[in-house]
Length: 363
Image 1 (cartoon, rainbow, N blue to C red):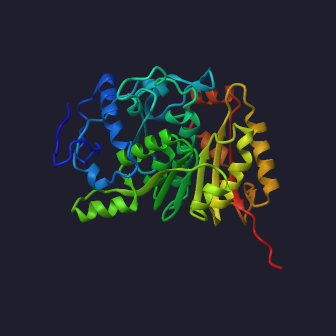
Image 2: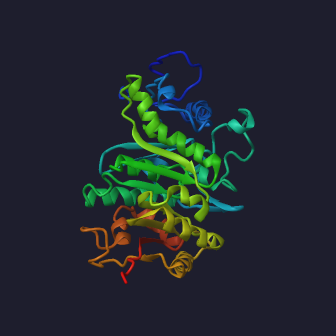
Image 3: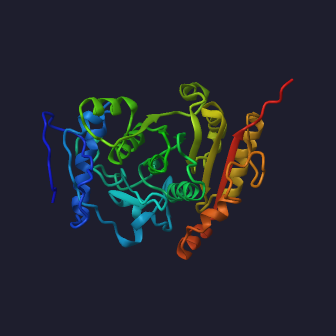
C-alpha cells in the first residue's frame, strides 16, 4: 500500500507526505493505526530535524475517516471520569479542509496509537482522554480552527507575516491551520510533554518545522516546502512565560479556563507573551456541568484585576481588529450545520473573546 520509499543511511526516521500523494487507494482503520504507531516513535526526540526526517519519504494515500467524523465534524460528547469523550476521539487521526486555501490538514491523536513510553505495548488507557485531555481533538479545537479559517477568508492576509502562539495546543490543529493561512511562524505550546511530542509530530507531518530544521534541509539540497513552526513545553506563569516575552502577534487558545485555579497564571502568561499591539483570540465551549458564561466571566474578572489586558468590544472603531467582521460568534455560527448547532446549544453554546493590552497613558 505504500507507494515509494527513499532510503538513505538512517534506520528510523519520520514519514513525510510528498506532492506525489495519490488519492486512489484508501487504507482501512487497521492500517491507519499501524501507520500512526510506526511514526509515533520518530517524534519522541524533540531535537529531530527535518533533514533527518526527510531521509525516508513516503507517499501515502489519504486515510479514510468514518463519515460522521469527516472534515472536522462536531459530535456530542459524553462524560467520563475526569473528562469528556466522543467517538471521533478514538480514531488514529482527524482531518479538516481549510476553505480559504483548500489545504487538508491531518493530525494524529494519541488515544489509539501504541505508546512509545510503554515499550510499544498498548496501554489500557490509550483509548481514553481521562487525565490526558491534550492527546485528542476536542470540539473547541475544531471550532477555533474554523474561526481562524473564516477570519482569513473575510480578512484577506490577516495572518500574513505574524507570529501565532497557541496555548494548550493539544494536537496543534489550530497552529497548523494558522501556518497554512499565512502565519510566518507558529508556536504550539502545552504544559504536558506527551502532548508536546504529539503536537510536534503533527507539525512535521503537515510540513511545519523550526528555523534550524529549515536551514538543515536547504543545505542538504532538499526542497522540503517546510513552513516555520515549533511545539514547545510552556507552563503558565510569569517565570516560564518570560522565555516568550513579547513573542506573539496573535495568541490563540480554546477551552483553557475550565480550571479556576489557573486563571491568574493564564492571565499572567497572556500579558507576558503578547506583543504591545497584538491580540488574543480565545474560544471556550460549554460542556455538561459547566456554565460557559460563568466560567469566562470569572476569568475575565481576574484579567481585569491584573490590569494589563482588557476585552475589546465588538464594533469599537479604535480597537476592534477586524474590518469586515462585526461579531465573531455570529460569524462562526454560519459554519455550523443544524446538527452541530443542536450539539453545541445542548451544552450551553460557545463564547469568543478578543483581548488586547491596555494602552498606557503618558504622564
